[in-house]
Length: 187
Length: 276
Image (cartoon, rainbow over all chains, first blue to last red; front, side, top):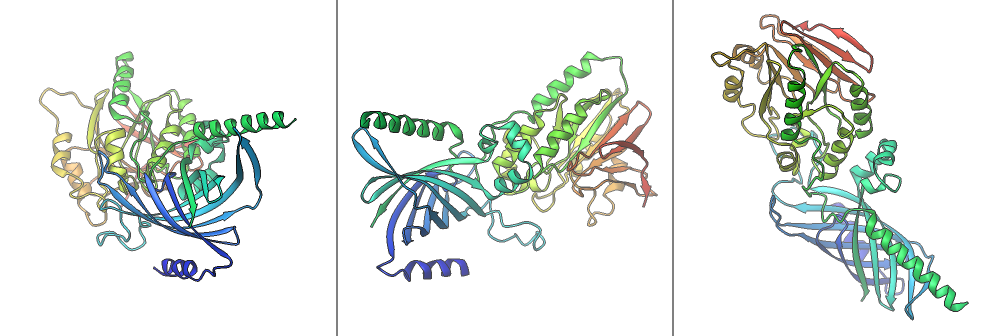
């Protein structure tokens, strides 16, 4: 709750001169079939987002809503690509961390009463580390490709590097990374 | 020159997109359940074990590797199964739970990938961490039932779920009693029970009950360190295997008359149960 309040304060304390607002939509990359974000970017680098996502009903669980808080850092390095007479500005890297919460009966935000305190971490909350490569296709529209790793994936990769390297492609990253696609529109 | 640069740009762009699409999975949430790995499927492993049994009908003694708690360290699980691959006397492996830490699909995939290096069948038993989030669904779809039994060379193995915080009404004592009982005309040397957690403190007479049902040895994990004990007045040995971190496992040597236990870290020493 405190993190959420801090985020809301940051979002709405943005001064008009330094901040730009964005609508962002992402599919997959661990944040749902669709996830809509309202974002505020400071100095063209630091972006804070609040989002709402959705996972449709599957054969083995009900549909699920997701809520998120995200911070993204975008490097200022850009390249001009000329694809089929269309100029695209490529920003190769941005990095983000997302606190994701799922809303469903089979996962919990706090431990059920029958389980002793601190026995497990809440299973409804996950941390996602991501990298995006971004293509500005119009003045105010950017599309991106997202690679995301769950916190447990990052920890396991660090602890078991040789296992991942030997059993998966691309230095083992294939074993932990999920991808998504999205777009951003400057408001 | 400009035309050349445009072509180079296009090639780079297409290469990047191809790499992006080919490189990883399109997961819509951390709580997916579709584990693309059949290595630990119970039906498949029991069929494989049956083939091994039929291939050596005259051999009445065998050994079983007892491992558990590989969560968070799939690399060590891989090393452990590779070590066990080289021990000829071991016919199969029992994996006593906690394949995952938080019950998510990816953790099951990593454990399954590590287990796929085994050249022997692996029979898995559900652990408490496997019961988190959608772990139970993944277990049923990928591995099989929580409670099951099989007989190998006249020894019956009974695997049961005793993870009380994550599942209701476990263990199913009535089912355990039925499974342990010997049918008229059945030839059985031993009845071995396998669960993730040793009898809970809240059930101090469970070991008495298991003995009265007909079990003569029990295998567990969960504690992450070796233990081997029996209640003095009951004399039902409970072997608790360590986790697989730094290649630790147990070996149960089973003859028609006796069961002995080796504790391996990774070198093996024979151990005896301590009385409690």
